[in-house]
Length: 221
Image (cartoon, rainbow, N blue to C red):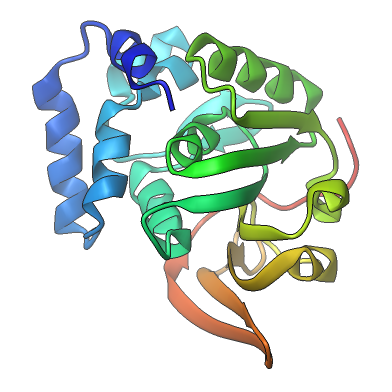
């Protein structure tokens, strides 16, 4: 984490605006103060088009092009809180880099973040943003995220930021004691956020609530 770079990135963004978002997240049930503080200091406006920057600190998803979105801050907070089982994470895999915002949040809470994006244009843009913020512990690759990142497995946490059915390859790359969080269900229908823990006896699952994500697709673009 480079907190100084992140604070500079926020620039003239109103502290009151950012704190209002944090208050909304608390009211929605986010209780991990570390997660809330990281969200408060991360310049979300740098991860959206300039034309949408005035809406960056609303608790809403926003388009980032190519039919993709930057997730609602509440969903980012909930997924991050769900995988943060201790004060800090070790090695994390994110499937679906998108704008790079979720990776930027994770980079401040983990030793290393490996993130895959199937759309080459978005992967390049995210890499540039993360480099600008000096978040050098994030590694971005243009890959089909359904395959995970086998050479870096196992992972202490895996976040999937697209909806569908989680491939077995991702569960296989989860370390014992590790946590996977993903939206499960078909796009356009009811999806639910699922938290899965790998134990010595198998996988333990719990549902965290209803969500709506873009589809988890195969192949590269």
